[in-house]
Image 1 (cartoon, rainbow, N blue to C red):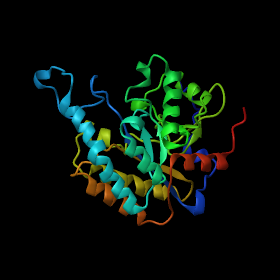
Image 2 (cartoon, one colour; image 1 turned 90 degrees about the vertical axis):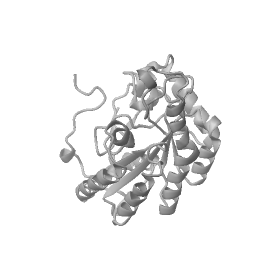
Image 3 (cartoon, rainbow, N blue to C red; image 1 turned 60 degrees about the horizontal axis):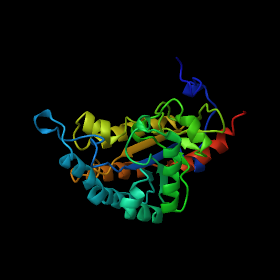
Length: 292
């Protein structure tokens, strides 16, 4: 079965896209802030259970995640602030009530809020998907003062109905589909929904937690990807997302490479650091609205 949400479109057969101020590349930093339920199995683990027997509460893995919000997030935000970079905060709505300083200080820094479910649990396990989407957006809006325009499913999880529900609930862009270097309109039953290029290649979970690479690997891959996309972007715009999590990239042995990555990228002219909504608005202005 072909992709049910998009027509096949070879990237070199498309109309040329031009970024603001003649930039070549849109660079989109995403920081994922999640809330894990201490009463449930952890969303992911860094330490196996003793004797291979799952335990609840899973204290070592829960506290590994909790370190990210107590320490790692603030270490990462300090790096981004020094470089003058506004990130997009992909956030579980439950974070708004339990970690309010994360929301208030990122809003004050001009970051964008991106809906990421209510708690870190895939949509496929939710009994009422529409309610989760609606409740998540309302909770983030109440805490941040503005309704998010975009959505990323926990674990990038979707059901076959998710894009339709997102569009019907007024969400304008989604990040679950990691199949392009440019935005595109998705097929939905009503309204419009734009897919914005997220990443599992420049993402600290697969790099460090699944593949177990050294601390500098995200930086090395991101620099190599940047060089390619920057070259290609001279002909038609590209989007480069860097996806990170505070309990991973915010670790003391990785943070220097996060800093060095942004220093490298900022050393090049023609780079547009942007949020998801800024990419959305630029793309809609370039491509126009699809004919219904």
